[in-house]
Length: 176
Image (cartoon, rainbow, N blue to C red; front, side, top):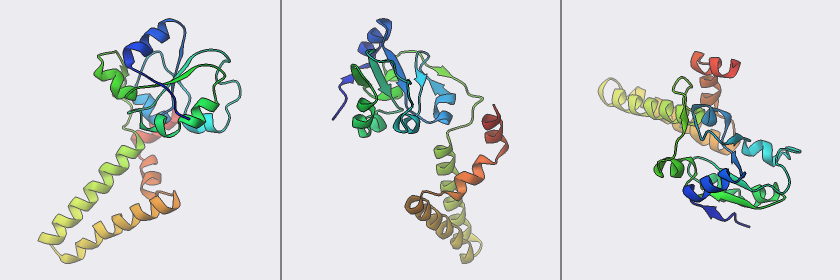
């Protein structure tokens, strides 16, 4: 099953008529940037059967960052609703492209996935550059990072993400 798409302008009209906008992104994504009218209800919580989270009979519009997660989980999301349900076309990015307002909190850290990508990419570039200029032994660093990424993908455990969660900027967010 798929959720019918609503372009941002149509979604805005539905919101003005009492529809409920649900942000299915993770807490760290929602904290940094969000649509003011959106209620944060992460995908994991919805999939776990958040009882009473969505009122019966009310129109619900789901969104993520780009619309991809919402499309991929359309059947599960539709099953959570006892009334009309839609997906916001283009997600938060589509909403912004339409010139509609978002709330930004630059004091919040980047979402963890992006932090992992930046850290892993930086270590690979650094290890490659130092391996080419200082000693070939430093080529082990990109190899180690690559193995860690493969392990994270296969096992679902990312040591780098766990390490980054312990960083001061992320601990402040978790404490709030």
